[in-house]
Amino acid sequence: MKSLKPITRILIGVSALALVVTFFVPLWQILMWAPQYPEGLEMKIWHNTLTGEVRTISALNHYIGMKTIETSMFPEFGYIVYIIGFIIAFGLASAIINKRFMLVSFLGLILATGFAALIDFYLWGYDYGHNLNPEAPIKIEGMSYQPPLIGTKQLLNFTAFSGPDIGGWIFIGIAGLLLGLLVYEWKWNK
Image (cartoon, rainbow, N blue to C red; front, side):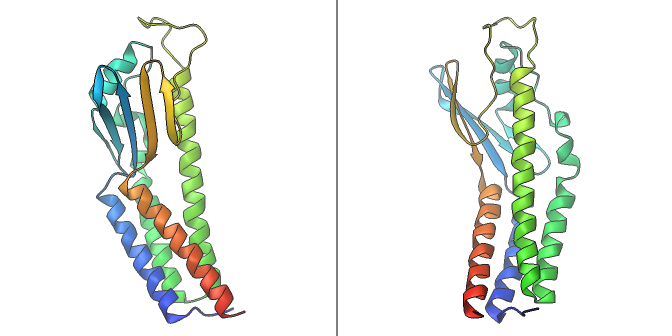
């Protein structure tokens, strides 16, 4: 089992500690624009809550039969703190153990967590955009309103955008750094 270079070890530890920031910044964002809202509406998704114009977005969505957006509809908020805490601890353990397989495992853990989060968000969005109240004031036969997973999508007269916020970019940046460190370690020991 190969040991890591000192700089790799330090950067793994710093990466793990940088994830602490994700407890204090939003992880994801959903932005919406329409002619009647040219300044846009935003919803920020944190590790434990929602912020932004959640009530306004929820009220607008009510007209097309979508459920009211509430923090309680996301059971993930009850355990994401433990997942992030575990990732931080695993990253620190990777720096302490000082073996390449731990770097690979740390990178794999972050990628798997990100992939699982995207699947979870897609499934929530699918349910939210397809299971509409049949008594809604506005009904368009065959229309669903699933928000975009990543990127922009037109939903009636609204343009909706979904993508990483500060916390999400921290995770993406750390995954990129870890991948770079893995390539560095592989080339250095080749």
